[in-house]
Length: 182
Ligand SMILES: [Fe+2]
Image 1: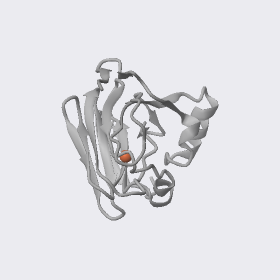
Image 2: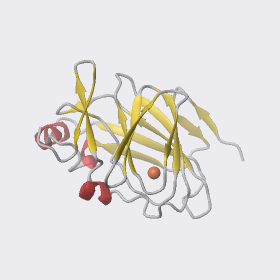
Image 3: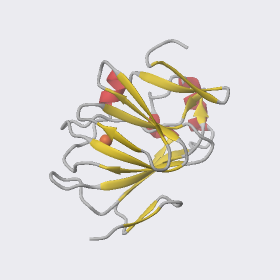
Image 4: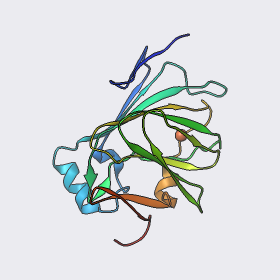
């Protein structure tokens, strides 16, 4: 089968399910909860969307999706995906398509950060929780390819964090430990 993707628009054709994550869906994830509550009350903006291909998320299949994270910060922390761990520890690749972002990974002990731009493949080894962050001023889009039986555990991140947080500082980035007071 053939699936076409539009690199500029961040769409797949034919498309499967589409997921839209608003600010209210990211409860408990931003360090500054007051700023998060204000953003939810002030229009509850869309933070990111995920367009899937029709390939099903079942064992031995190899689904794909395109995630687009809008630019922005909440309490100084860059907009990001919820992040997840694969309950069935399996690897995954992300291919940068447009904009500038990063791939944050955490294995419960060590943290890794991969700068993502168009043409970069970010590799997520089995057992590493992962989150994507838009660190630019344009939408950041990437293609994900992952084993259909890997699953998505979002509660793992709420319990364990992701090692570090990514903040806007002047024109660049700053990293702080996930559970640190700031
Ligand atoms: Fe994943």
